[in-house]
Image (cartoon, rainbow over all chains, first blue to last red):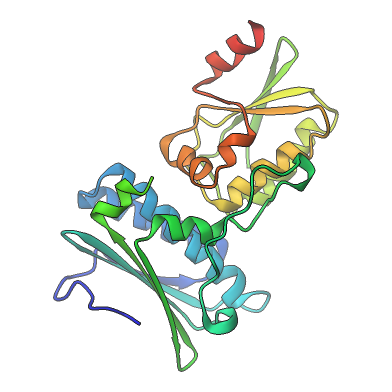
Amino acid sequence: MASAAPSGRDPLISISARATEPRVRRMVRALDAALRASGVTDDQRGSITLAVAEALNNICEHAYGKGAAGPVSLTATLAPEELEVILRDSGGAMPGGALPPPRPPDPSVSRDSLPEGGFGWPLMHKLCSDISYNRNKGQNTLILRFEASCVTLRH
Amino acid sequence: MQLTSTTHNSILVITVEDNRIDAASAIRFKDAMRALTEDGPAHAVLDLSGVAFIDSSGLGAIIAAMKQMGEGCRLDLAGLTPDVARVFRLTRMDSIFVIHPDMAAALQRAAG
């Protein structure tokens, strides 16, 4: 369920591209540049960029999967105490219609059992103050919220 | 994915020349690391001081690179920039590597 967006504000950045890994890299770089120019702290910028990169990678890999990559759009809007990032794609639905749980991989296992994946969603849960997902008419909307006070205190 | 390497006192120093290890380059990183380490240095240090960004794909590839070095071999990390350190810290994967502030410290620690 989407809560009210920072209203009446021009987006900090609004871009769209095909959801391929090289294009996602470019989108993440563009977001990073926009954040550098925006006045958020370096710590906030790093956290936001990482969370958005993880979300975009998931869209590449899971929403579109092995078929032809479709478009993904990113819109980031900055308010005094919060940044909101909206990602939209027209790929497949999130399994079960819900977000994966935040349970992170375990670093204390034996070396051969060390995980090489599964870090993305737990990272997003740590970095975002709120994550919401909905699907309507074949379109996925993922909203990531970063509260100014949260981003620096969480870690 | 460009890696360069030199050997100091039997430690293989691997420098990542790209400034990102992300979903677009993680597999190439892993393959490049395998090529450098498959004839087995026992101890390698990965210099990440030029890397400004990794995502969880990059993290997974670094872990995979360590695992593919095999039993008894060691891959340390050096020169983590703040954004890269954040990924290791939040995933708690900083606990599975020896992490040096920079390469000078890494080589000093190994020699000492």
